[in-house]
Amino acid sequence: MSNLPRVDIDQPKFDQSTYFGRAKHFFLVTNPLNLFASNEELERARDIVTKYRANQPLPDVKSIDEVWRAKYLYDSAHHPETGEKQIIVGRMSAQMPMNTFITAGMMTFYKTTRAVVFWQWFNQTFNAIVNYTNRSGTSPISQSQLITSYCLATGGALATALSLNRAVKNMSPIFGRLVPLVAVAAANCINIPCMRMQELRNGVALLDAKNKEVGISKKAAFVGISAVVISRISMAIPGMTLTPLLMNKLEKNGFLKKYPRSNAPIQTLFCGFILIFSTPMGCAFFSQRAAIKVNDLEPEVRDHLKKERPDLDTVWYNKGL
Image (cartoon, rainbow, N blue to C red; front, side):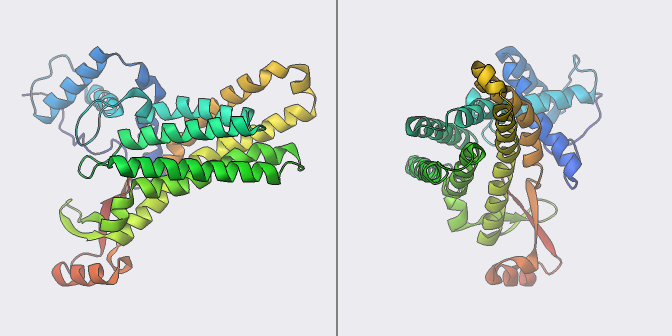
């Protein structure tokens, strides 16, 4: 038997009822340094997590903090339900470096139609990989659903970006630099609901305080997916608004004219710095295990719960990310 203290490592390490606790949790989940972990390190993390869950001896592990480090490293590379190792660009820890590259590209090369088409396509291809990699293990995304979502989101982003580019052509350059943000927001509003259409059609499982399923709700699915859309857009807003403001300032004072090759490197580095913080802080706006009042559910679900479980005032569901 292990002498380590027993904690539930399948729950987040930090208090999820506070924003600060959720932010600390997501800083660990999205840590890009996890991408550099070798296969041997990932296998050791899996071994520690598996043995700790089974209360087997872990002679090489000296503290519970080491168990938590292994758990977060394991979670960063494996599907939470199936346990399969995820492709590297689809992992949550790849969000910051990949979005840095994509955001900088969209904001550096936004003036020509060819560039807009390429970067919006590239962004939606990356989103499709992320959504597929982090799909539900119990209700997987079908191939037709994945293709439909990909086409709709890419089409929506391109239509938004190209039409806005035409509209702002004669306005201040700052408006042109902000077009990619509006296109990304439009694509998220299309992409995420499409990828989770089954939840909107069939509902999500409602749980009581002991994680026992007590019903299914389409209203909870709608609320949860709306929260995810808001979180994803909020992750993009800081980098895609502050960076244009910085570049506009550098353009006005002549810096970019004097050092034209500095444009892309400055945007990339600045975006990366912002995304280190905005990615986990955007995720933390809402708890992944979301609560909803029974009285706020659709009438038939509310009435069923009040009849079967009159003791329940609040139920919970998995919002997703």
